[in-house]
Image (cartoon, rainbow, N blue to C red; front, side, top):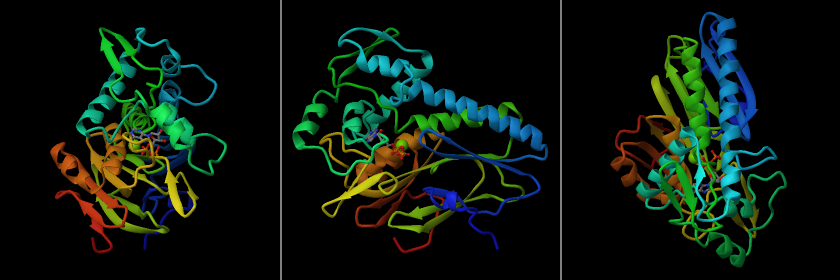
Length: 331
Ligand code: ADP
Ligand code: MG
């Protein structure tokens, strides 16, 4: 019988269930984008597979360095976040495209997704190296929330921000985009069967040997258990956002890294959301957006052609009609 492959994969939100096809699998794990990223390539030529993985990882690192708002290295996003207000800043086509997608999802999700909350996200501190132990004050939240709604404008190739609080954070979409770029590079090396899993954000192509890729979705409240399985092949992007990877407990309440953009407080409608979309960028952004939307997000998912599983704050499970999932417990 197939076993879950390793402790590392168990720690991830979504993980690969099927056993390794030892003869043809090349498997490598790297730490990137604040998480463990695993590459599985099924190809008879292992030298080629290794080279393709190395190149895919380099490309993903490039994407991370362009979009991150953390660390000491300068980039265009950090420069924009420090730029004087109402002053045009030029972005590369790549950045403009991801930003436009993020703003489109903000509109479509009716504001559940907001890529301009960098200051608030930093205030909460979930992506900082020092562990957070208590929530910020209401006063500080209000201060940083102010002016983060409709504060961005594009004219020709220039982007303008109208408030100093309007600061970009691609934390809920860039990982998915990086995975898409990684898969594109694998394909350039003629890899047709592969999976990239960045801590629960996944894209898979082809098959796993002669079988489907088998994925398990973690129970948000029992870390070593799964609540659903999926058997997938072809080209599938599947991403989970949850409240159990980056969080702290304070006075009996859970505080985690997904924020409700209208209040600046932690979003309380869901425990986890899993989304299948046309690519990992969309699946990543929408899994965060639907997390904030909660069970009413199912309608949004259906409207925008996404497949989704939403586990609400009470642990009830809701799926879109066509979600190809095998739930292990009753919804
Ligand atoms: P993970 O990074 O764990 O995969 P997500 O994709 O859900 O999780 O992204 C969470 C990150 O996105 C946060 O760390 C923060 O940087 C940012 N973020 C938090 N809340 C929102 C939101 N409502 N809309 C857009 N980005 C958000
Ligand atoms: Mg996301």
